[in-house]
Length: 139
Ligand code: T46
Image (cartoon, rainbow, N blue to C red; front, side, top):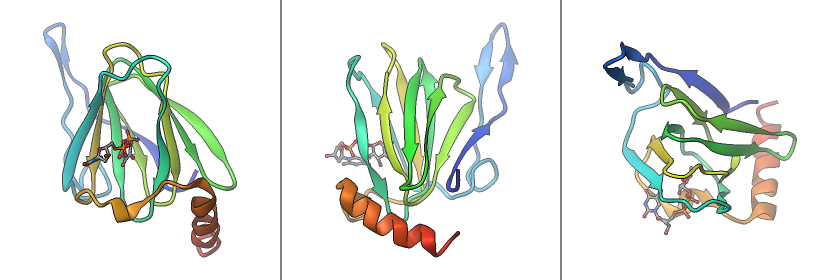
């Protein structure tokens, strides 16, 4: 799926524990301007329901597991994040929903830009309209 890919990072360690380094522009395809994390999500809650126009992000479930639905007007898939050394890159114009957060899970997100509500498309019909135009220029 274009603008979506899983990336495996190094997982350095042994019985004493593990360390995963992530370096901007080396391990992931963008510079990092913002980090945020999502914790304490109750079972049954679903988040997301939006796309970004220009933002690049990397999602890593550093503890527990979560499912991510990624969708365009043409295709969709569900990716399970359950390893602290696996990231999900999501580029521009991908609708996303996060669900099935396991108890105690922590989803860390690295983002290419500072927070801007103007970059969000939270209305699905509006997303579909903009996405069809965006993807028609890239097919
Ligand atoms: C995304 C998925 C994976 C801020 O003030 N600063 C921030 O950096 C962010 C990300 C959010 N906010 C505010 C905006 C809302 O009032 O926090 C509130 C919750 O945000 P939202 O409903 O957008 O959260 P999610 O979990 O639906 O989506 C988040 C990110 O917003 C989004 O970019 O791709 O995680």
